Image (cartoon, rainbow, N blue to C red; front, side, top):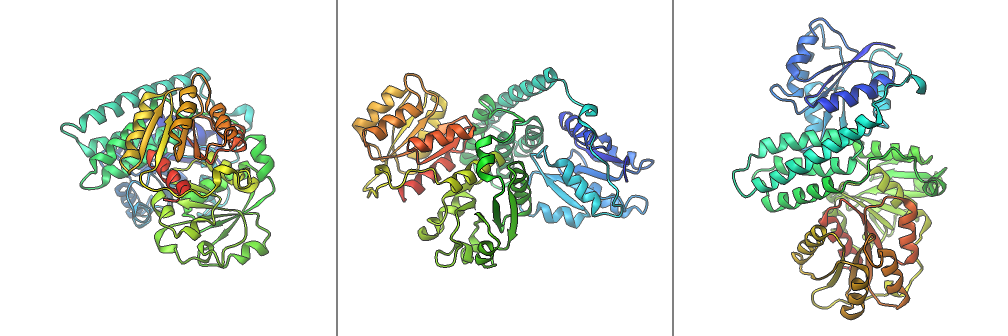
Length: 498
């Protein structure tokens, strides 16, 4: 009921503080607990309207706490919502089996948390829910304090991630590492670093596997160190006008996405003033055409290869974006792969989704330019990597060489252009920000000289105008820092037809 409280259970002080403020501004009274034991003690005399609990808690975990709450006649009516990073398959079902009324994935999308909680309350016994506070009455963390929290998070994260990398060469405690990484998953989203949260969530999943794949973990931790040192900017900026102009009023068919990914995509589409329609992978693509949909976003996984949405003969003749893991996307039949104008791979971000959907609708790639002519590659592909960041350069080179590609490097724009002329690589990876000539200038020169190669832009920018500029100049694809070298490899393999 309106004004009744929510209990938040989380062992990370920053998470408790920021989540409390989010929910207070949505009109809720909020009480917090740092452990399951503390929460159970509070419930002896306190009856919240809903409990929001992290699954990974020290001592008693959130699921065991939920079981005890549901066994007690005095508290069993209180809905418990699990906060989970989905580190292991089956976490969602475990939460439901324990008695949870719902689940919310970390990193939390701060724009949608209030609506998610409100919907959960509506579906329980009482239908009256709090009204968000007026803008003038909302509680805020002072800008200076928020900046200090972000700086501390990034510095401590970088130091601890580096230490975990060093520990891989000696005694390594996977359980303790998982506890540390789990905290980053939650905090990064609340502080505005959702890309870091996705990277941390992938690492937590790797740490849960036995035996731990040390080589894969080392690569992922290196990516995380890079992410902490040069994070994608935390920002609350509005969706760029160019994207709103492209997506506003458009109808998007969302096909087969998991619930947590559907929620993230719907929040993003709402911000761009687009409408979503939902379809099962077994349904007919013609229904999207009949409803007047403008775009298809379809989920790809191994057991859906026979879906009509993924079959060239029956797929809807609409611009299409495929969503899935890089392995699942690249294992598709080439004819099915060709249905998608864009891919969203692995740890995609809502902002990234809006850019890719916008590009799919506008078809900004030039029609059949020289650099898109078919090229038969015999032997090992030659790849030029141009970046003034020595660490990123070494990381990308190692990943590509491990997969049978010959790599050539450049640390500035002029040397990148000269290498493109002399080496004539099959593909070039160009960082946007380089000394001498930036990535756009190198790209423009390569196209002006009709050098036949695929080009991927590597950029820390997420502004749609920057990306649109790259495609207008003749880029084939782009990837945003911090990035996974494996995603870069997957995009390269797709461009090269490997």
